[in-house]
Amino acid sequence: MNPIEFVREQAPFHLLPDEALHQVERGLEITFYPRGSKVLERNGPKSEHLYMIRKGEARLERDGQTVLHLEEGEVFGYPSLLSQDTPAFDVVAEEDLLVYRWPWAVFQKLLGYPAFAEMFTRGLAERLRLSTRAEGLGLVNVDMALPVGKLVTRPPVFVPRSFTVGEAAQVMRSHQISSVLVEGEPVGILTDRDLRNRVLAAGKGPDTPLQEVMSAPAKTLPASTPLFEALSFMVRQGIHHLPLEQDGQIIGLITDTVFMRQQTKSPLYLLRRLERTRNPGDLAGYGQELSGVAESLLLGGLGASEIGRSVSALNDQLVRILLELAEERLGPPPTPYAWIVFGSEGRMEQALLTDQDNALVYQQDTPEAAAYFEQLADFVVNGLIQAGFPPCPGGYMATRWRKPLSEWEQLFRHWLEAPKPQELLEAQIFFDFRAVHGELSLEPLERILAQGAEKSIFLAQLARASLQFRPPIGFFRQIKEEDGGVDLKKGGIAPIVSLARVYALEARSLAKGTVERLQAAARENKLSPEGAETLIEAFGFLMRLRLREQLVALRRGETPSNKVPLESLSPLERRHLKEAFSQVREVQEAMSHRFHTDRLG
Image (cartoon, rainbow, N blue to C red; front, side, top):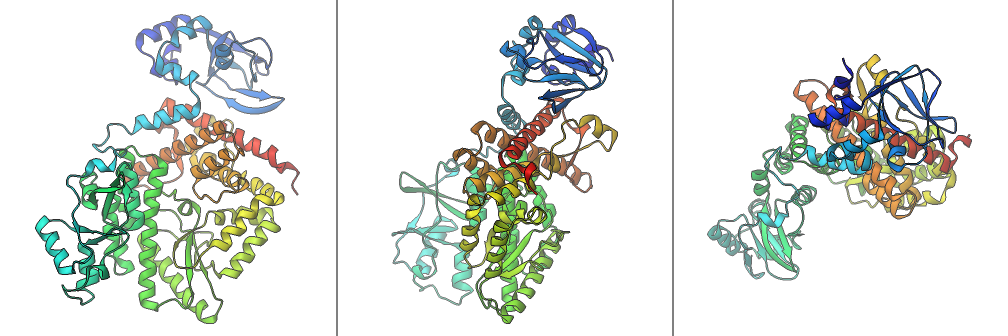
């Protein structure tokens, strides 16, 4: 391969037009550095060139510590060129180094091409945001950012609160609609489902007062709400009709059929399927349908966080249905309880089916309660298996993790007051807990967890546990030599999740989602706004990249994994990936210094 052929395959040179590549070829210089020599010196002379490694490997050093490995195709020297300041790192030849380079005059001309210049003049967070946005454009005829009020086609229909069910049904028939709004304070709603379930199935007649069977207050959203948020709201609430407000007035009402016309693989379509479930056997194929929903949302340009919330909301509804079926078979629970989920489901970041992570909390510790909840847990966990959720290899399921609230409180206090490294490695995912179903309040556990900000040893040990996975500082050559796959979870997703958990608890935030945790940490000055923004965008980029490759694997009939083959990545994605890993590692180093994790016993 001649030099220009190699160069044009590397980011961001692959974005240049032919006339610019002629300038690249004319200005290219080739030089050699023997192993151990310094190409650039920290606080030394400013860089005079933009460098690209053709053969060999270099390392970035700061105070004698290796920060990053640079491999074939990677560029360096540009921060000093752009700032006209001294280099911030030593660049040392790890082995004999063959380098292409271009003087400042050539580099300056190339910066006149916006796509090329963005790689050097924009921060990583902004570049990741722009690349994600571009990837979703034009793939489907759905604008999920569209204000939901734009879908309203007719004014709302109201009936008086004094109406009977029969009179309301006649209005619905005459207007050919599936619901009516009920006047009064608060506004109510009657739907065709209410007529079936609360009137006909309950043996009530047409003279039944409307107030006995309507829902009030009706669940509403502002008409300016983006389409996706409205869709997610309807899934979470389990509703099929959504009144929309503007300037304090209801201006219209949309139904789930509108969403299904907008998107054939809508989450609401799967929600309807779940509502028809009468036994766990009806759930066969749920996982495949869920992957179709995730793919449709991905093609619609949604970010990974939005997809995770939508998918997790569907999984929540699945769990509620299984719990309701269990209660129908076993009878009412002998004491209030809460079914909780944690891990990615607890954070509402699950895009495809993964191992189960659930537990059960109940109020009174009695033999009757222990026997009841053992059967309930068995029923639900087995139902989830039939739906496609594999059992958790570590046993983190309600069949094993079910305790009265007092024991959970004792366990949480133990984790905070006597933190042990190995215990926290396993326990940290429980801090993502979220109640999905049940009447028992988990405020006592939230209150204990909120005290974590005052426990310096706990935070330090949790910080050390969060450093279990570290992104590699140089990995492309190693990956080529091994199996060609980049592990996105170990390299970036899990570290970001863990960092966010620690910083949020330090900031006294009980937010569950990774993005919300990072935002809370930035608000409380536990993490710089720039650092939080970069981690948020890196997290979205990695999650989206993983989901894309997992969906490709499913279409091929293969088992999805956390690894992405190098050959499936564009030059730009490879560069963004390595930069994202580098940023994660920098924040990990900052956390290690902040909590002195190297001094912990």
